[in-house]
Length: 365
Image 1 (cartoon, rainbow, N blue to C red):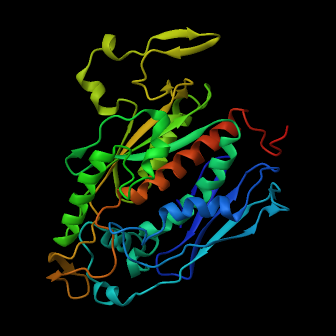
Image 2: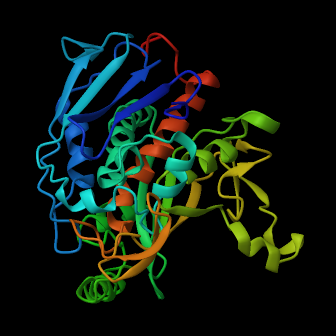
Image 3: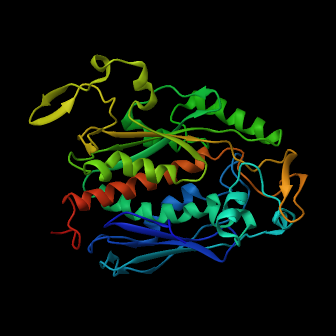
């Protein structure tokens, strides 16, 4: 099946499914000499794993990573890095009755229409659990680009109709991890958590918006037309399950303004060229400007809800009703945060190698 890989030079291929034996990623194109341990990856996986708070699924996975290749004596050796996480707490019983009855809001029907035969347990390859592979690839990418001073942080800025206040970019990483919603505004975070728990109590779910900010990104990343940095970012972020919209910089709000209001004017900060504003989200003409790269993603409410829903039995071709059981997040946004960071980091690592900021075979060159 195509569509399981991303990147041109720093290339990540993910594998596995929600109820299969394991999930993971193969990272090809990471230069040799980067210090890398299982703990570097585990730190990121711990942020994504289930069962960490009252607003996430209770599925009891430890998500312990094993590095199978690509690291020798604590450093990458330039060969493919393989990271694997074994599924430990699999319960497929809740999906037996749903085999031929597609769940509304899920990819069950469309995947069956495309492939005919597919793993319906927990959504199979279409499950949010496959983002384990994103996070493994992103953890390596983060470690690589951080060596050049690039940092990627994401935070929840909206749940339902509750919006967070603006937060200083330097504080996002610190404040986000202080509450289960992963919102850098503590006051809004409390209201968001109440809304999520209320939705869970009703057997329903709620969506929101996650913002990703990359600082320290050098100017000159990206290629004209089909290799634009913002296009690659939009593609990988849209590939995260349940994401239904992507904005770069000011996004759709540019439609409300005049050019004189949103053009980012330049000034000199010593010998560095900067802009007074950053409505472009750090990308102009498809190429990074040196300003912070910003993107926002709209995440739909979790489609797995316990309320009765109408569907069609594909075996009898009759309309019927289903109730979804199992273990699900009432809101996906908090666990999307590390996945969004990982996705952006993978794109930036790839473009930094492509643009010559990072040597493709040896980081010490």
